[in-house]
Amino acid sequence: MVLAALDDTIVALATPPGEGGIAVIRMSGSKSSEIASRLFVTPKMKKKPEFKDRYFNYGFILDKDRNLVDEVLLVYMKAPKTYTREDIIEIHCHGGMIPIRKIISLAIEEGARLAEPGEFTKRAFLNGRIDLAQAEGVMDLISSRSEEAARASLKQMEGSLSSKIKEIRDELLDLLARIEVTVDYPEEDIEEVLINSVKESLSLVRIKCRKLLDTADQGRLVREGIKTVIIGKPNVGKSSLLNALVRENRAIVTDIPGTTRDVIEEYVNIKGILVRILDTAGIRETMDLVEKIGVEKSRELTKDADLILLLLDASRTLEDEDKAILSWLKDKKVLILLNKTDKPIEIREEEIRSFSDSTIIKTSMIDGTGLDKVEDYIYNMVYSGQLGARESVMITNNRHKEALIRAERHLGEALEGIDEFMPLDMVTIDIRNAWNALGEITGESLTENLIDKIFMEFCLGK
Ligand SMILES: Nc1nc2c(ncn2[C@@H]2O[C@H](COP(=O)(O)OP(=O)(O)OP(=O)(O)O)[C@@H](O)[C@H]2O)c(=O)[nH]1
Ligand SMILES: [Mg+2]
Image (cartoon, rainbow, N blue to C red; front, side, top):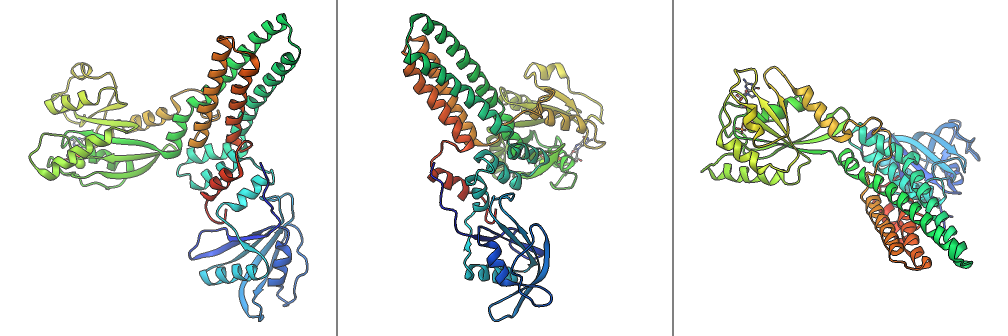
């Protein structure tokens, strides 16, 4: 990989645009301190030739005609112990569009360049402070919408995935070295022993890749949230369940069957996990066109749901509509809720069991019975009750998943090659491919263009 020239100094607003108490403008590069010293004056209106490392400087920003632009706090952070490993200046000004814009353009007039999206983090990467997976962890932390997503991003930012990948790559490199030595000095008996040990190591590495890949489903749920669809015949309490889970009266609840006509969507945080809940129109045979479209939509939504909450009215016997829904939800991840259990129970669990072996929970939206169990079920869906599962490395990024799939495939091809008695130096091609695919995760084996593309998707000022 070619390192880009990093001799210019970049500037950008690091806080979100809009009005706020303060805004932080950040500069990175060898000229940051020099540029800042030309804009900044102390309360005694003296220019400051030099800033002390990691100290807050109180003063003012003046324009070229020595007009006051804003009252600020300025920090200088000396390279290399900074976010980008370059000299950094942060100007904490008032959070209004005018001072922000003026200060940035003054910095540009003095020789800085407006940063591209993600460029500060890109510099941290190019200067070797963090690898690509860690940089992506930073971005995921910024955009995470639940505690668990933030936790996973933080771990990635700290390098837990990177060190796992490094460990696997080192094993492959070691393997390649072992093969190389014997290919250069071919002796029959060494070859035999070598082939067996290569095979064994390859299988072990492949298992490690697979284990990582197995966490990708969990990773997606943590990152994007669990898409949960509430479904059932009209009037069973679907909208009441949505309201109970989001703890507000979001959806209209009436005793008239067919109240909900369109899909209602809400995000809720259940034990730190993001859950996207969709309340749908009750499913029944209907002549009403609007309702018919709603019913169709409800069915459509169940197709890519992570979890379906099927509500049944416990105070009535199982009806044909319930049976129909139960049959088309076969092979789906369903949690059955027997609702209205505050009333005398008429429904028979054995009858439900002849259609489905999904978990059944008794609930009541009137007194809140069973809601804690529903929440536990959703939480356990992600962490599947495995002890320590929360602590291990998790794949949350599609790019990483895709690279791992390729690495795993190359390792499979290498193993096949050995089984088909291919010469070992041919097998090394597959091993090398796997090693490269894994290197894409940390950024070591990516071209500059692809790296640029990844950072361009990051947000401005980061
Ligand atoms: N007794 C009792 N009544 C409930 C319970 N849950 C909901 N209800 C009542 O049942 C009626 C229908 O509730 P909704 O939440 O609107 O039902 P829905 O499934 O969304 O109905 P549609 O939108 O028409 O499909 C309302 O009168 C609720 O107050 C419960 O657990 N027990
Ligand atoms: Mg409803």
